[in-house]
Length: 98
Image: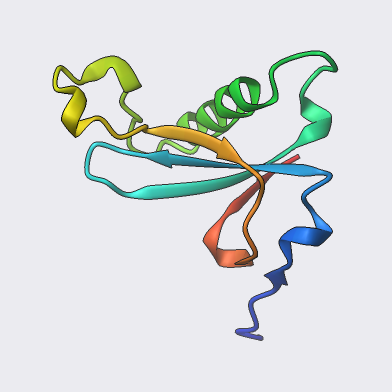
């Protein structure tokens, strides 16, 4: 059995995936790479990729992700879900959604 972890260079995947970060109430971060093929043409890529990642996260029975509007104090506001161009990562740092 090999302990090798594959490294994913973002420049090889940025035209096929979008990275989504979800943060739970305990400040644990979960990273998902969502296939752009799952998002219908003309739809908002960021919003739809977040919806897809949250659905996957829920299906894995992981801690729930608070909604961004669950905070009264704007000074303490920190987005709990965000989508952006993928960063290069080790394979054990994220979950692919294809």
